Amino acid sequence: VALERIEGDAGRMSHPHVFPPLSETRVAVVGLGLMGGSLAAALSVRRACAEVIGVARRQAVLNEARGRGWICAGGTDTADGVREAQLVILATPPRVILEQIATMGPMLAPGAVLMDLGSTKQLITEAMQALPEHVHPVGGHPMCGKEQAGLSAATPDLFVGRPFVLTPLDRTPIGALQLVHELVEAVGARPLIMDPIVHDRRVAWTSHAPHLAAIALVQAVVAEGERDPGVLELIAGGFRDTTRLAASDVTMMLDMFLTNREPLLHAAQQFQAELLDLCSLLEKNDESALRRRLVEVSRRRREVS
Amino acid sequence: VALERIEGDAGRMSHPHVFPPLSETRVAVVGLGLMGGSLAAALSVRRACAEVIGVARRQAVLNEARGRGWICAGGTDTADGVREAQLVILATPPRVILEQIATMGPMLAPGAVLMDLGSTKQLITEAMQALPEHVHPVGGHPMCGKEQAGLSAATPDLFVGRPFVLTPLDRTPIGALQLVHELVEAVGARPLIMDPIVHDRRVAWTSHAPHLAAIALVQAVVAEGERDPGVLELIAGGFRDTTRLAASDVTMMLDMFLTNREPLLHAAQQFQAELLDLCSLLEKNDESALRRRLVEVSRRRREVS
Image 1 (cartoon, chains in turn yellow, red):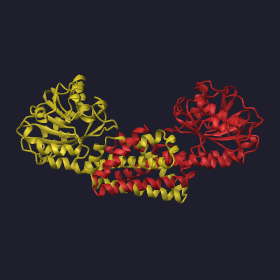
Image 2: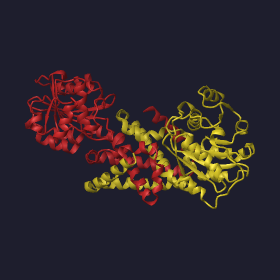
Image 3: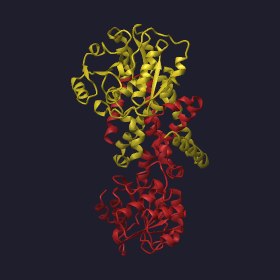
Image 4: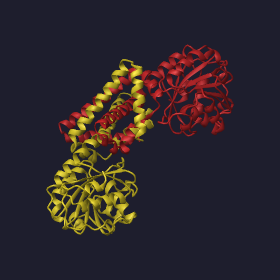
């Protein structure tokens, strides 16, 4: 969806507040893990905004981020860190984001834009509805996870070429959406504007169900490894790739699953139905049907690579 | 299993034929796709054997292999290609290997060692039992697939650090096993000596079930993409990794599945049971059980990476 279409949306509220361009914006990033650290890094390395302030629970993390030149100031107190920012980005796990949204309103300056980077969007944008009027919320989800977590895994190039979903609320002013849209482009990502419910249904298929499949596969092989330890010697690249997602940060996965249960259960059911169908072809030794299936799947998979 | 243990095996037949060391061996590779091409490349680049002869169906493939210096001679006629080789390696898909074993005996020189690179071993080693006495068969399976097929994807480094299973038959002389063991080490792989039935059961878990899961996942997302094309925009690295195996060569996958049906169906069943179990925890919103599960799986997955 092009930003022009959004601008043409007659239902969207116009707002007297003038948002500065990103280059003049003071950005506060709350949470300096893989996502927050990488965003701070990308903004700083690319000199995309006026200033990056970091908020983290541990001083050591702040020191490391400052040492790398990824934040110019920072602290462990959220209220202090976000007070003077024109754009505040919540880069904590989804359920921490929900808690922070509930308490953060009064800490924010008038006209501040509040974006999050959580992997589900419906519950988070619902919680954003309750923010005080002087704050302008918008949901965000950069799709660029990797299995390492924390600032040590962060990199300024994390977002390059990756989809970065933005889920504006009805109350989000055009200027606020423009600001975060500019940020997404500034860090090299591909902005996609989307309804939060649609987003959650889609990531259930493309991200959460693959996580679940990877976890189940590791569990099955670990259980077999207890009956026959030799099975672990035959783990090679194919198994590693297929199960890479199972090594993701546990709290992130748990929050992702628990804040997107219905869509994920639906996608998982369809996945199981496909699996059962394949097994039944195999059981019947139906070579021609199996070959047609594999030819089609292999072709479709190559299209997305 | 160390080779010493095999040498100490009193039941194993000693054989009057003296096998040359690999450096003095003329090797014929039948099939110059990803595996055969890479093996020819590794042997030639590392100057591990006396000569590499290639056999392929298409002259263009032979020309390319010769152009790269990966074979020193070759042809499209199998009988011609293997006639003077002391070690013949079948690098075709598993069911082609079965056909070739059935007809190849009379083409081979007395004392020739015949190895295959097929991804399943029980049916292939059973077929090898029927070879004439002057031929010395041994099963092989290098575990280093990738989704590209053909000589253009081949590389001399394909085997480096990867498991390479050897499944000797009761009739395999020690000297023949030593020769292929030397070859495995010469191309940089890790030799693992294993019973064919045990091998097939293990790869059902670590390779074939992951292929099946990847295929089912692609099918599910493709079907959803027909209902909602936007889902495909949200395909990112996680989905790509989890489903990489679904882009593998179709004939290779089909042969792998159809020559290992029982073990694969068993592994797939266990995988589905784990998946259902995870879904039921999610349905019950059982956060603490789900967290314990994810902590354990994430830890185990990191151990094998």
